[in-house]
Amino acid sequence: QVQLRESGGGLVQAGGSLRLSCAASSRTFRSYAVGWFRQAPGKEREFVGGIHWNNATRRFANSVKGRFTISRDSAKNTVYLQMNSLKSEDTAVYFCAAGLGLREIVRPDGYDLWGQGTPVTVSP
Image (cartoon, rainbow, N blue to C red; front, side, top):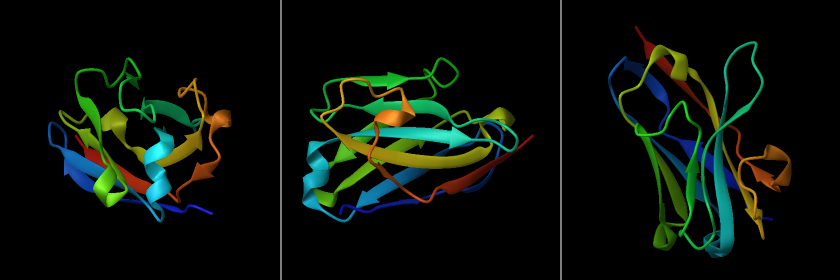
């Protein structure tokens, strides 16, 4: 079973940047679609961004377009979420998820694997 571990969360001031990492325990990770989701206190989990297994397609929530990017380093079995121009409303626990054969990467119910999450706090 492939395991996922997020890292890179923390406290940052508004306007700052963070890079989250989603590291997998297997090289088969390169064949997975990967999505990033977040959950703020009292709110439902929401899609942030995702990348298809072939890296050809990336999608982002409207709220983060132009500020967040996703990249994959297959040699390190890691997918990154680069977050720039952070806002207080980006404060949440961020989760990465992975799934094989996914065509729809926005919906959380298609993913087989989930990490434990990493908290991001953006101060005003």
